[in-house]
Image (cartoon, rainbow, N blue to C red; front, side, top):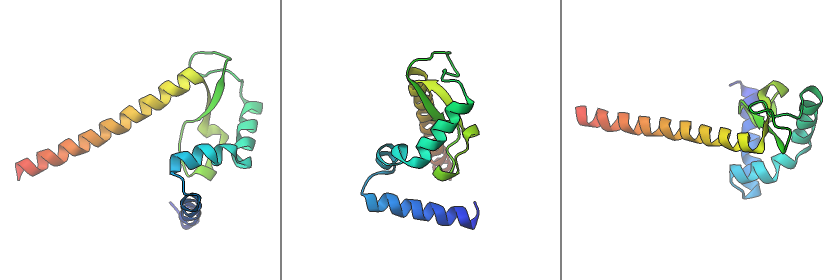
Length: 116
């Protein structure tokens, strides 16, 4: 991460802190209503079909971040169209991966402590 990104990230964290919201709530209530997100989403749908990439549905299409980089560095190539059902499944899959990683680290610490 370069100095510019770090500085921008610090500014963003300060903005979130000032809002009094959690990062998740700030993202949902502020960012998803921002001109930045609306424009990025609009560009995405100009260049991509309003069709779920996973199941092909054309109903209730969301734009999903494939890669969560620094929020304002998102490119159209970091996004994909998913129907609401597939979008929810994708987020559950991501949560399960994160939880598994946390549990593995916890188990490794326990094993290291017992081996001493």
